[in-house]
Structure formats: structure tokens, C-alpha cells
Length: 417
Image 1 (cartoon, rainbow, N blue to C red):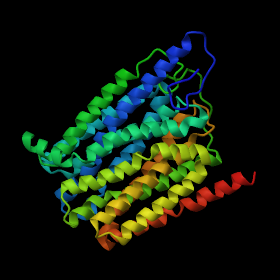
Image 2 (cartoon, helix red, strand yellow):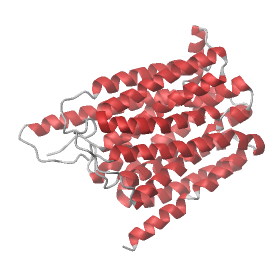
Image 3 (cartoon, one colour):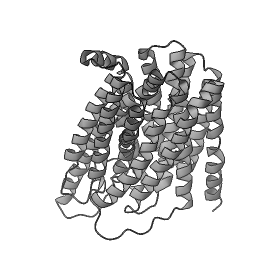
Image 4 (tube, rainbow, N blue to C red):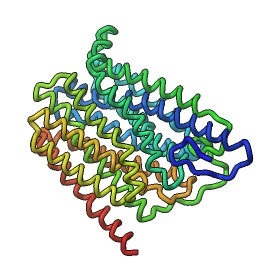
């Protein structure tokens, strides 16, 4: 008997119930994939336009990283709130609520673009963090539907779905500007208008599509009323947290200022959007390979591979900071390294953890990523203003090297047991 879910775990059930569960699992996965496409499109549009809008309003590179900083800070806050909501109300309520909050953030930033208000840009970016968290937590919802040996591939399936929307979104900067002109908005305001539409559609898809009476599907059921056991951070979970945080810090710091650097080099919105789309493709398209590699060699060894790619990408960005073509290659590699680190770190974080404890650990993971990325966003603007983009990229390479001893130590411990 087979299941249509990636790595689905067979369970004994009464005759006639298994096909129903298979259909429910398949429907849940399709809903998660659709919401990931919509959320990825909206988040990539908003994320790409944020640094450009802040730079345009303030006229200074030093504040260009602040919208991304507030976005990742909002992601951390949303992770705590949404993980708690997941524990009490289930995945459907948590994910749809996060998308709705991001929709509100898009509205606020659109107003900020009209009135050239940096405080409103930052306030809206904080709300947009909930959208980022929603997109990222979708991978855990898919993993709930999989067996322990298939969780990497299950998470990869959602990240792959995110690719289509994210790549499309980053290439809509120029068309969004035309849409903004039609509505009488500033050019970058159109990006947030389209993002609002994307998050609205994602909210409806999750709220309606994940409604089901089948409590056997772990990804969409509401937990029972029994109190959950205290969450204990094992060594593998701590390593997972470190990998997720450090990889996200490097990616955010190096990528946040890339559109600004490209703008200084004379690249237009179309070229910037294309290069960002290559980076986003690297972030999500390799997910099937990353998932299979993580399932095959283990999270700790996959993390070592991820660190190597991140170091290479940041080093290349530093060496070719004034070449848009080579910088595009560096951004692609940066995305690939982040993708592998994300799946490896997520697998380490929740591997072997009871299902009722996972939402809290997932929240800790997103908070760790948010705090680290906020630090990267805060320093990215000042470091670039003082030493240029090459110096910023070198700092990113240095941080990525910290993953090596952490993952190597855990790998060695496992091998000697």
C-alpha cells in the first residue's frame, strides 16, 4: 500500500480509512504548496524592494538595511507567537494568521511609499516578518506528514514550491513599477501592492484549504488537551539552532546590500530583479537534492557541506564586488549554501523529537534565525558605508567558517559512539 505524501509514514488503520487519509494528506500538501508559491512571491517582492525604498527615502546606504532588520526581527516575534498558536490551535490557524499579518504590513509600507515615511516603512517591515515566518514554517507542516527518514524530502517539497513564487516575485519589480504608476503610486509602492495581493490569496488558501475533519493528519490537526512535556534541547537540537542562525546571518547580511551595490554599479531594476531571482532560485530550487543529501549523509555532514558553499559564495562576492556578472554567480551560490544549511539545520533541530514538542522547537529555530539575521541586517549598512561591499562580504565569509567546528564536533562525536 502506498501513500502520495513524500516519505509518508504508514499507520495501521481500519479498512477503508487509509485511502481517505491518503487523499487528505495529498490535499494538505497541495494546499501547502499553493500557499508557498503565493507567500514566496509576496515575500520576495517586499524583501527586495525594502532596502531600495529606505535608501530612496533617506538617501543613505547606512539605513538601507533597516527594513530587512525589522523584517527579521518581526519574524522572530512572529515565530514565538505562531509556534504557541500552533500548539493550541493547529497549523491552519497559525499559518493563516501569519499571512494575514503580513498583508497588513504590505498596506502600511504602501502608505509609507506614498508619504515617503521611513518610520512607516520600518513599522510595515516589522509586520511583514510574520509573512516570512509563515513561509518558512510551512516546511515543518509538510514534515509532519512524513516518516522520520523522509522529513528532509518533505521539507524540500515545500521549499521547491516556494521557488516558483519567489523567483517570479523578484522579477516583477519593473512591472510592479508600471502598476504603481497606473494607480498614481511611487514606483516601489507597486511591489508592496502586488505583495499584498499575494498574501491575501495565501491567507484564504490556508484558512479554507486546510480545513479538514481528519485529525490523523499531523500537519493540520489541532493538538489534544493533554499537557505537552517540557521541551529539552538535546545536543543535536543545539547544533541545528546554531547552523540555522549562522547561515541566516550570513545570507541576510551579504544579500541585503547586494541590490544597493548593484544600483551603485548602474544596474537597473530589471537587472537587479534578475540577479535577486538567481539568488532566490539558489535558495529554493536545490531543495530536492539538499533533502536527499541530508536524509542520506545526515544533518551534521550536510551542514559541513553547506558551510563550505557559503564561505565560497561570500569570498567570491568580496573578490568581485564591482562586477555585476560575477556578483550574480556569488548570489546564486549564496542561495545554494543557505538552502542546504536550512534543511540540514531543520532536520537536526527536530530529529527524534516528539510531535507535540516540535512547534516550540520550530519556534526557537525561527527566533534564532531572526535574531542572527537582525544582527546581520543592522551591521550590513554601516559596514558597507565604511568599508564597501567587499568588506561586508568578507565578514560574511568569516562568520560562515564558524559552522565548520560546530558541525564537525558533532559529526566526530557521533562517529566515535
